[in-house]
Length: 443
Image (cartoon, rainbow, N blue to C red; front, side):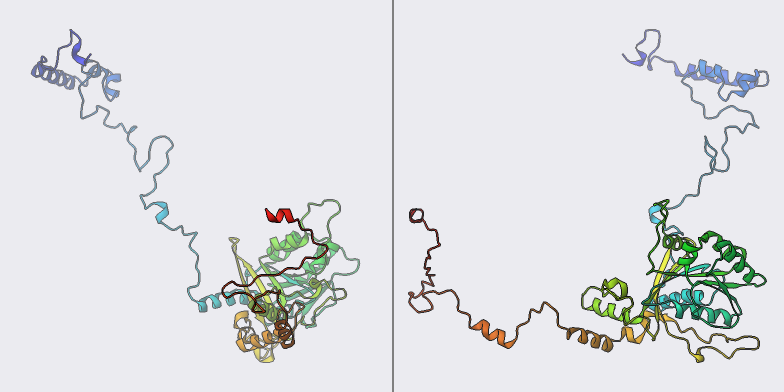
């Protein structure tokens, strides 16, 4: 049934459209002339109910509302519901790069080298907020003494107060270095008070702990308290040495307590691992020959070997540094620090024992001639090739002659008894121990 099939409703053809439009115009004219006399509910309603009831199919191009009514107008690009400002129209997310994802990466090798040397130079020269807490990892094969000595020397050249907390015999003997003894009956609180007393009255200080193992495991000093005292209260630099060849002590009360090394690595802003230069040369030589890296010292597992012969090379120290930014992103690089010379520093001025640094002499490991020279690495590989291994697959001349004299399995072809083109037939003489079934062979 169609819409106009009702008997009381006229069809579209039967409708008198001029009469309909004329009545609608008369009603609208009368409605507009009496707007001021209409009730308030009709004026406030955007579409008067009487018009909707009378002409349900009539569509108006305008809506009746108060002149000062703004409740239904959305300004300032606000949408309905939660009043959240609509962002500007931009390209899709996949076509744009987030500014937090864009890294300032060096474009060339020279820029990368300058950037890496700038990072380690800031740590060595004790620049403000360059590295509030630096952890140095060493062992018997390479002690951290050369690096710590250079830190103290550069701190004194900048007139920085140097405080040396010693649990072992001091390896450096320089003037104007305040020594704090950590051995004996002193408790952790006594050590913290002496460190604070040594830092009082100075604008900038350098606190060096020669053994974090003893500080954390024996004196049970809270690392967070020491870090807050040095880095936050006095805005200074804290440097700690951790010996990796000392076995960590597990807490008997709680087996889930993290190790001391894990804690200080988590808190450190720079982690530096000390390696012997001779050992690094041996590792590179093994890598170029596709061999396993050699082990040294305690890692060899040999009884009685504690320190290898190539340990603590006098030519310099190799530093594997990991710098951590405030965002947490690490940057790693390997450096080579040679011993300091007198010509590297200027003459000290009055009231100073060390002059200022003329030029930075720490370099990348790849820039060291001994490490990157092909002639030197070739001589190392040649010396390694001369060492005879237990599994030598080569044959001497005598062994080659014996191999040629071996008689192969006897065939009639060797005696020229076989017909031409038949090839060789192997003749087999059965022994007493052979089990041979003649009937099965006939089948």
